[in-house]
Amino acid sequence: MEIINKLTNNRISLEEVDLLNKQADDARKSDNSLSLALSKEAISAAQLLGYTKGLAKAYLNAGISCRLSSNFEAAIEYYEEALKLNRSIEDKQNESRTLNAIANVYYNLSNYKKAIEFYDESIFVLQIIGDLKFEAAVLTNRGLSYQQFGDLRAALNNYLESLSIYRSLSLPVHYALYNNLGIVYLETGSYNESLKYFVEALKKTHAEKNIIDESYTLANLGRTYIYMEDYANAITYLTEALIIMKKFGDKQAETQVFSNLGKAYMKMRCYPEAVKYFNRALKYYKEISDTSSVSHTLCELGELYFEINDFKTSKEYFIDGLGLSRQIDDIVNEVRTNTGLAKLYVKFQDGEKASGYLVKAEELAKSRNAYKELSKISKIYSDYYSSSGKRNEARESLEKHYEYLKKIINLEEENKINAIMLGHLSINDNTKDLMTNYLNEKKFELTGSNVH
Image (cartoon, rainbow, N blue to C red; front, side, top):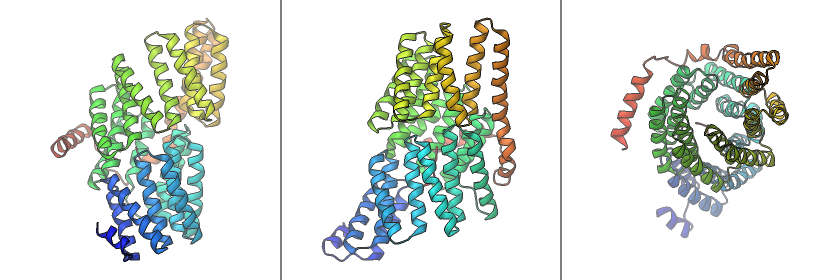
């Protein structure tokens, strides 16, 4: 109210704009709505004063708040204003932050190619000004985009660069990197290693009282337990994450949890519950215009109906997902849906159609060095040849399947990530004890991340 009165009477100062921006920064960790309100006050005050630097910072803060509440269109608009102002006053430091922030929006929208382009721009600016610390953070973000794009080798190279910077500067590793490495281990099937990194990320986010990022880590733990077929723990952590996300209005993250709950119930063969959560995810993804995730969820529903032998409905979902992924040039989900359709036609021994989908999926996966997808494609080829009595072809395809799996397993060793992390992480085998203590603490208190 005091700030509003000062604005009305034209008595606001530059220092008070800076204070509003700082308060918006601080509030974002625990109250995103307050952060956005403070940013809007700062925008009004800075515009009144003609304070370009303060205005650029306020636009950046407002954009981050909008991104965290899944209002991506508004976030981009704020960021573009911030970028224009930072470039007009040649503020390279904040230009780099804004480029990173824009990249984060494209990452949220699953446009990983576009995200990588903006991360590249941010890193270029950071190298000009010699800001190694923030470069390490952007490398972590860029690695996550490569990871989601399916190129684990490029992702790990980025993480290695980031780790090297942290090490050279004798800085503590940012919790986002622990989260991202946990996802790498999840992708390579090393679930216990994955849990250790997520637990470390959880300890850090909890200690720093960064509740929003804490919820992302809880969701990552839930997803890991799905892979480990420990569905009770999966649902526990996903539900805990959901409580926080609902409180802070992170619609996209909340929707991703609905999708993962759908996967958990599908794996448990509780198909009505799975359908309910997938349809809820589909509805919300459409509302926030996350078209790539709509395509992914259609693919998930295709997989679900394939499992319950409703092949007609399965095909409809796969076809819808494929059309959408092609429409938005989303090659990650195009591979998924092509693979799903191939599996469907293998079921009916229609080799010609299955082969057509597999050839396209393989071509797209190879362009991204997506070994995990290539291993699945090779396994489908092997299953088809085996059912057709083509033993030699089946054996060759199975060998390719294992070769790709071996490449995935060897990636971490090639990059020597774990060796470096040992200097930053106390590997603790009592993961379950740590998590039990954490949950007990959270129950007492209350009831899968980018660096901003």
